Image 1: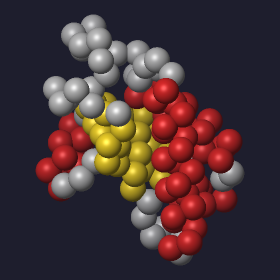
Image 2: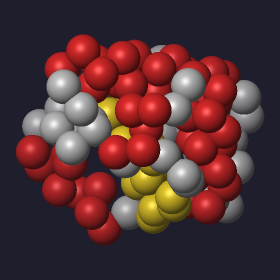
Image 3: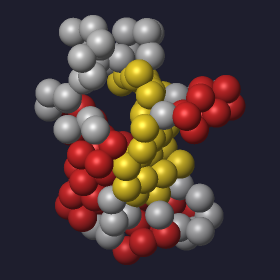
Image 4: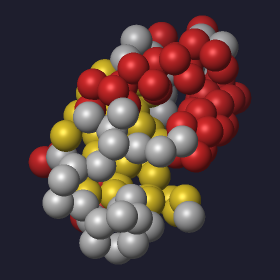
Length: 116
């Protein structure tokens, strides 16, 4: 089940997690014991005005949803059910990218972060 990451404390904990970057996004993640996957998507005003930021956010959310349907590589100490917090940070170049470019960038970032 995919839930939203909320609260400053959850975002602060992700600073110590593993990270990886793609052309349009950076991904940070950290294993948890909650038994669920929580996702936070950050799109700053550097990306563009509200309409553009919301479009990027929707595209990233769907890309993450698709990628998480596929099996992930889990650390050896992890349980059989994936359980982690994930933060996706959009770069300004994400504003001009279409959905397929964003998904490729997410896939690349997942690989560099050790999730694939």
